[in-house]
Length: 207
View (cartoon, rainbow, N blue to C red):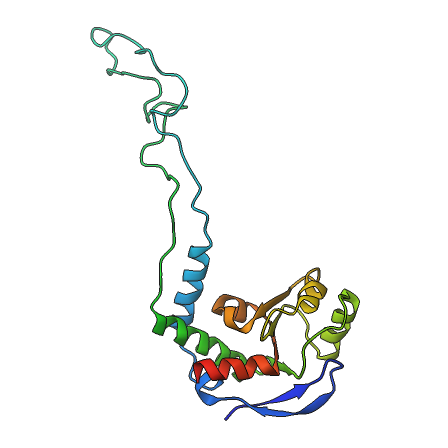
């Protein structure tokens, strides 16, 4: 079983914790993680891009020249797609990019991401990850104490308002609760900082 050190909020090591191999010790499946990240990004697309068809652009109500006798190609409107400032043929219209992955795929992708972080030694377990007050300065000191540089994902078992608000203005730091974890956020973080109770919650659900 993988083992990680457990720290308190001052960065002092308080013990060790064995991680469940079924959650943090599987062989990461890279193609499945890639599929999960693509799905996450696609589902966040707004799909609001819109082009104007020839029926929607302004002008072009009059026929530019008579049908026959000019030697030129027949034209019905100066707003047809082949004209400058004409409408767009087959252009994008508002649509949804959402699609779903199967439950098994999402589960495997999440466990693969967690296992990849454990294998890379990027998981930091904190015993009692909470703040007594909303203080960004104190949270920065905590991150420095546990040697969390760069992008960090802070995970708690439930919403802890003081933690969320203390970390809100720190560049590169994201906060989440265990039940809303996703592969994109896990893989995008340099350090995965998680409350000990949140680890137990994950192991309870996925083991």
